[in-house]
Image (cartoon, rainbow over all chains, first blue to last red):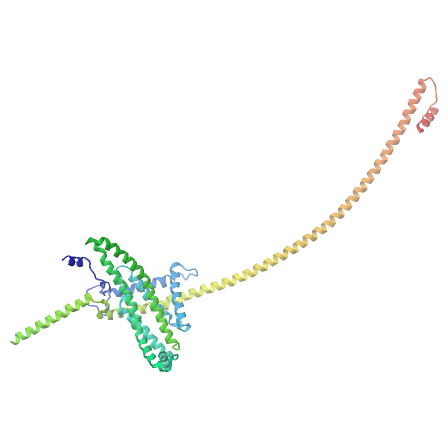
Length: 256
Length: 191
């Protein structure tokens, strides 16, 4: 009975926060239904507009704070694309920058208490990763034709090893979108779920005496996890973007 | 008989349906919402909409603008550096010109000083000569006057002596003419 009460008092629903719900009614979720995911994607769009359009409207030589942040983001991704893919990769820069902006804003907005993290869903990151995968494959074949298959035929390896390496390379090539998407969604989901679990322990002080020790610990743990999540939010956006650049380089210069 | 069979079948179907519903709800509430495939079309649709909009905003407005700003700034910096270089060169030139002017001015000043010294020397010589001449003239005049004074003094002495001698002679009761007294006095004065 006591344990039941406790488990009723301490509501563990770490996955509740990822639930997709319609915003305006409780009906079924059609493809066009406006849901909380839609809302937070719209917020991402608004943030992008605010930072990169309104923030740069002054076009100042000596930038305002907003404009310097926008320029910082621009320079960061621009340099990444240029360094990793080379000069000819810069024509894909808007696309890469779109991915980076969407992911970084989604991740950070998801850290607002009560917010919904669109990038914690495999459906979202899956689309992002598959789009990169398809784009890279198509660019590779359009630019290099069948030479693109040379990516799987490692010339620097001994001839006997090459077929085996080719099999490994092909598998790793097709695993890319999977790891690419699950890495991001998994990181986002795990961090948020852990915070939620710690948060569920926090009200223990209202229920039982042991809460005197548990509640401060859980609050401390939430703070620590939150700090870590801030780091992860940026790092995962960075990792997704730089991997996109690395895959693009494979498509543009399959020789290496 | 047939009726009951259908009823049973219906009941079984209903139960199965409820069980399936319950199971579905259970998996939905307990499992990961990420694996609820019924929401996938919705998320994918809105994701594509969001990405296309962000892409359009960035590629049409934001990125060209930021690229322009960065290029402008680079241009401004390059221009400013060039201008600064030019100004520096000008400053070096100006310093050179200033130093040259300084040296010239010093030379000019030295020349003027030397000329002035020569002029002043000449003036000084002239003035000295004039002063010497004046002094000589004045001293000559003074000598003349002294001579005169001396002469008049001697004459006065002679007169006084003559008068005194005549007075003494008459006091002694001897009448003597003026001529002889004068000659006697003159003779005594010469001794």
